[in-house]
Length: 609
Image 1 (tube, rainbow, N blue to C red):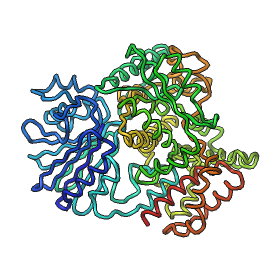
Image 2 (cartoon, helix red, strand yellow):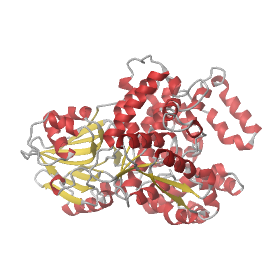
Image 3 (cartoon, rainbow, N blue to C red):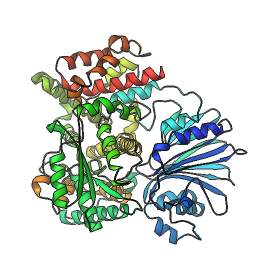
C-alpha cells in the first residue's frame, strides 16, 4: 500500500510536488520517488509501503520497458500472477506494479475489468500526452481529484491535493451534507474544487480537461436471481469467502487479522487460520465501559480458533489525548468517532505486522444493520400511508423514543433509505440543516438515490449503504487510520465476485423469516464457533461518546460550542446546535452525535474561515 500524487498543469512547481509527496510519508515509509516531464506539464509522486517484492527495483514511479508509460499505484492486485502469464516479458521484478503497467500498455482502459484487488493508480502516456486515473470497483483505495483554471491534480489524501493547488474554497453544500450524514456525501469534499473519483470509475485527463467513465456497478449483475437452497447458498458463500481470504494471504511481510468477536471478523479469522494451517496473529481493542467492550467475545473466539492473540483497552485518557488527532487527520469534517479505536489498533498492530485482514463490508452486503429492518417496517402497506401519524404517536408516548419517531418521517419513497440512515445515526434533520446553512438537501438525496429508484425497498437501503456509507465513511476511516501508521488493511468481503454474488442473493438469506439479520454468514460461522457466540446480540463498533462528552471531553463543548464560538461560524445560523447542547445538558444522550459533528465543524470553520 502506498500514497500517490500527481498533476497535469504548467502552474505546479517541483517544490509543490515534493511537498505533496512529503505529506503522504506516513502512507509509505519505505521509499519515495517523483517523475516530471516539464515540457508536458506533468508530475507524478509516490510513497511506498513495500509488501510484495520489497526490493528497490519495484519502487515507483515506474516506467514501462519502452519508456512510453509511467505509473504510480496504490493498492494490491491479487491476480497479478495470472495476468503476468498473458503478457509479454521479460519482467525485472516480482511486483504487481510492473504487471499492472504492462497490462495497461496491452489492454488500455479495458484493463480495470480484469483486475482482482483494491487499487488507485495513474498512468502517464508520453505518446498521447494524457493521464489515466482509475479507482477500484468498491472504493477501498482513495483517489481525490482537484480542478482549477490552470490544471488538474490528484492524490491519495486531500492534504496532498491541496499542496498542488492554489487556494480552495469551502463548500457550504458539502458541509450541509456532513451535518446530515456525518460524512461529506455524493463523492464530494468540503472544498468546491476537490472531489473523489467515484468507485468503479476511470478518467482520462489531457489539455481538454477530464473525461470520466464508469466501468463497473453492482446493479449490472442483477440479470436474474438464481434459485438455490439454503445449504447451497451456504456452500457458495464459504467457497467465495475462502477464495477471497486465500488471495489476500499472499504477502512478503508479516500478516494478521483484526478480530472484534463479531460475525465478519470471526469468519475471516477462522478461514485465514484454516488456510494458513498455523496460528495467525489476531488483534482486538476494547473499552473500560463494558457496554462497549467486545474483548471478552474476541478473546473467546481467539481461544477457540487457536490464534496468537493481542488486545488493548482504550481509556478516557486515551480519548482526551488522541481523539481529535484522529479526526483532524481526515482533512475535512468527518464524524465517525470509531476512527479512534481503528487508529489505535492499527498503530499497535503495526509493531508486529505490515498487513491485516478485516471483516469490513459484511454488514452492507448481507444486511447486518437494524436499518434494514426499519426499511421493512416502513414499507408495510399498512404503515406507509400513516407513517407521519405513527411518528407523532411514538413521539408523544415515550420521550426516550423521540429519535425513533423520526424514522417514520421520510418525505418520499425515493429518499427513505437516506432518511432512515440519517435518522438512525441521530444526525441533524433536514429542516435543521436548512435553518443552519440555507441548503435544502432533499434534491441532493433524491439525486443520490435516483439510480436505484426502481429497486425493491430493501435493495434501495442496500444501495445507499453500499454506494455511499461504505465508500464515503467506513472505507475512508479504515484507509486513513491504518495508513496513518503504514498498515495495509485487506477486506475479503469486498472482493467484486463476492459482491456480485451477494447482490443476487435472495433477501431471505440475509434477513430470514425470524427477522435474524445477516443470517447466511451467521449460519456459515456455526461451522467454526458455537451458536451462543454466533447469534449473540450485535454490539457494533462504537465508542462511549456521550459519557466522554460529559467527563474527560466536556472541554470540547465549551471550547467549540460556546456562544462566543458559535457566533464565529460564517454564514450559518446555529440555533439548532444550541438546542442540542441544552437538551444534552438536560440529560438527553441522543444529542451526542449532533454535538460531535458540530464540534468537528466548528474546528474546521475556525481553520478555514
